[in-house]
Length: 128
Image 1 (cartoon, helix red, strand yellow):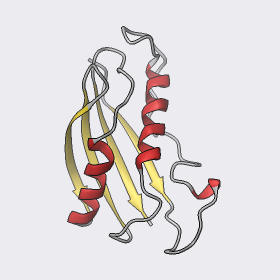
Image 2 (spheres, helix red, strand yellow; image 1 turned 180 degrees about the horizontal axis):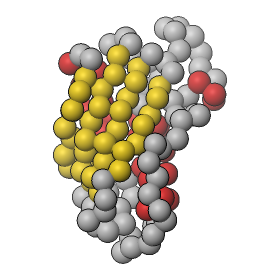
Image 3 (cartoon, helix red, strand yellow; image 1 turned 90 degrees about the vertical axis):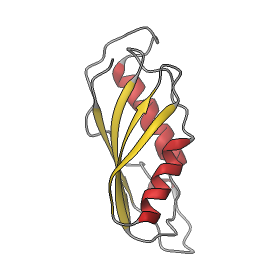
């Protein structure tokens, strides 16, 4: 099993009605907080490449605006050997709506198969 890693995604959400540029997209300037050393395993991906692809998928699924307004949520999750997130636990949330947004982001996500067969991670989402 892969060591637990924590990724941080800071979202700068534009004001309602404003058009976002590429620089305004979630994750445009953010990077994973903890990138593990590059090692290869059964999936053929290094751990750092896997984390990069996972981070990219999370950013793609994160909405540009939040109907819940400003707030945050932190979730822990497990990715199985096929790359499916099969468990999401909300550790902290500023509101139930923020928790629901994060659950939706993570619940349908398909990542590449993780090196080592599975992955445990944690992600903080900040909505501005």
